[in-house]
Length: 202
Image (cartoon, rainbow, N blue to C red):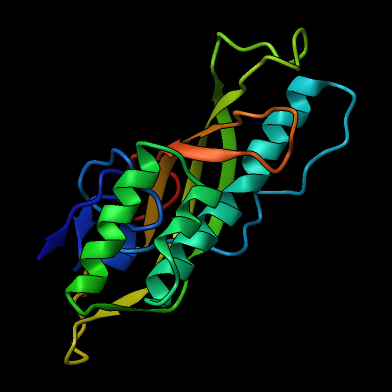
């Protein structure tokens, strides 16, 4: 049984396994896979280089995004509008669809995922926050490895819908943008394709 969600399209079986990131994944995720803590994401930096600051802020935003996705899967009463605090289309639309389907089928998530690493490995070449911070729209591609081994999902009868052989990790490439840069609170995820993996290196 699979629940597609544009970004983290996946099976409810693989659900909580690859779910926290999605937007254009290889269809290997479906439920939440967020994390509220992450070694690789640090607080917003205070360097004098605007470009470096933007990159650090983008990376530091990842745990917030993943944590919110987890919260929405864990609490069926939480409004889907909360997605717009951490995502924009097409990711927000994809997540809303996936979470709505997950809830409508009576599935419940148990446990949270943990961010293992997160690093910006690509920057949109059309942006240059250092030269025009007021009009720049920084866009970073952040690669995040998430441990989803503690995330489970059950159906209405309490039966697990997660395959026993589900890979432990989810590797996602999140496109993180800031429409109101340099406002540090305006970072959002616009895409989050992901894949399941046996390790963060593979």
